[in-house]
Image (tube, rainbow over all chains, first blue to last red; front, side):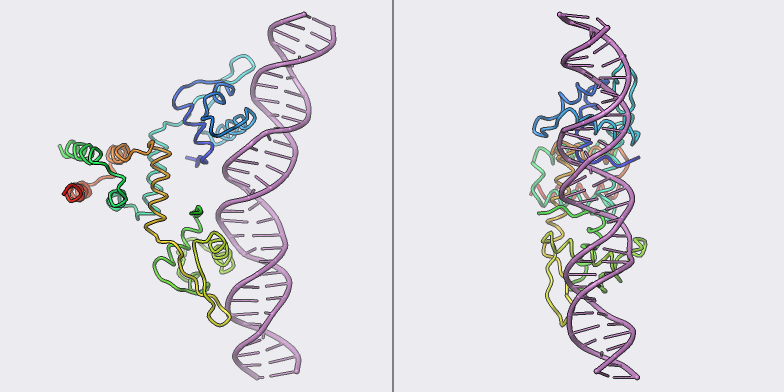
Length: 121
Length: 121
DNA sequence: GAGGCAGAATTACATGTGTAATCGACAGGG
DNA sequence: CCCTGTCGATTACACATGTAATTCTGCCTC
């Protein structure tokens, strides 16, 4: 699966959230703080099409875009890449790291424990 | 802190592992499968210097390079970025994701549980 | 002392990415 | 029927990155 650049990812998010959409719809839904013009969004859509992570169907003389890959799959791949690169492929150091950085609230801890408990059963 | 590109990161790893080193030393220690020439490594070193994540001291007419940032700090930042982007800043979904993808072995689970237990005390 | 070698600095060049502007086709309103 | 607005397609351009080659500058060797 092709890499998706940071900006392109924002476009994917829109379509994972709601699809199919026209280019204009996508542009309207992209976070405003990106400050993108419609042209920019169209460029992104073309590139994502070229990468094969979007598909489009004709709707009159417009296109309707929709994701061609599942969000979970992409997220899994990216997470895996990070874990491989920075933690030697081991998950525990990542969790340890997060813990040490206070990224874990007591609620998080409780939730994760519950999750793990279920996993064991 | 400046972003460090994928390839540049490999150079940082070398120096986090052992420093200070000359450019030639770094080149010799970079994973062979990168297939980099000495020139390439030197380019990386310059760029990392420019980014302020390395420092160098003169040693005769060579330089000795050493990291200017701590590995844990950079890793923390990158992990945080990923979690923000893909998991809305929440750690639990990440762990859930890893679990669902069978990236957690029983040993991992045990280790994480122990970690969390310590955190609570 | 001249030639070559070792280092860093400078330059190079293709591809990816952010961020558009422009072009060409066409559909709908007047 | 023509104008204008709307689409996608094509082109643009700067900066980052991967991957070097070339140049400049001394030190070491014969």
